[in-house]
Image 1: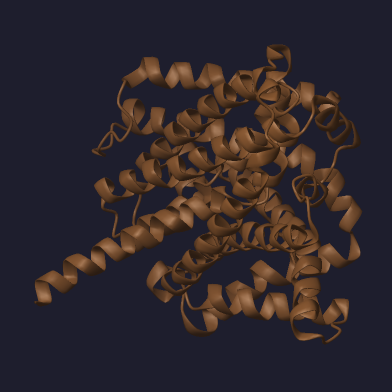
Image 2: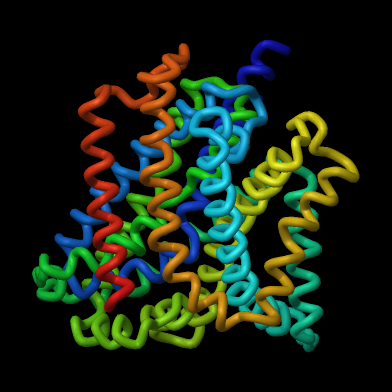
Length: 406
């Protein structure tokens, strides 16, 4: 019996890790993806989604190789310092810090108003904006404080809610799908979708935490990455089929030209008042699943930067780490909201591509062919595959530039 319980516990931990990774991907990007892929058409949208999914999965496996080549509990600062030196550490740490603090700022700026609105509708009690932000931070900061196991279990509940609300929206919109909308193809506009897809399928910041959580078991970690990225890909494919089949080309162009934020994008699919409520819950669940994963990743990032070993990131030290993670973006969201929105396009573009595209390829090249460390190759193919991925990363940078200029 004890052995069976141990096996079951290991399966549970793998499932928690997988859904935490999937929830990190199925976040706010879910709402924005059809706005950029819709102008290209359904088949171009599916092709570009498939391409970025495979690229993201590959770079995630490469990141795991670099993580496993370092001591347990290592995060991006210490990993980059050991593999690529002091200047590489500064570049990596600065990129990570800037990217994910601005992402957390966006979560607070967009997520808290929905959280407050739904709370008022359900309880009938008016909530002041400052109180809404405070409750949001206390609740989710508290969840992150109790660690990845508690956060992962709560994430599973919100992930389930995300899937249920998505299915309600999809099936409710099915009668409105027009077959001719799905036949439209504008392959020249595929590049518009790549930056958004690349950001939506980003999860690599969470991998150091998952590595420690799964006791550096490379087989379970590989399974977590493969399944955890496949689930978002399938949902994104169905989501785009529904959105592109329902809305006209002109609607997508109007939303794209306005730079419609995700909350406005969500309203495009709501056809009745009760579906508006479902859409609000869907949006909130999307933010929360990404927020929990990002919070866990940032706590371990700070712990690594402050040289606090993984076993010691508990108690008062973890409380301080949580304050460092949640308080700055909370203040930034209230004081400099528009500034953060303006920077978000740049950060999600070039820095995200460098951090998630170039960095893992560079690190694994050093691990395999310079330092020659004895680490299992989670991504087969050797140098030709690494070079091919590097070429794709250059193309993504190019498309990011086109998007920002536009």
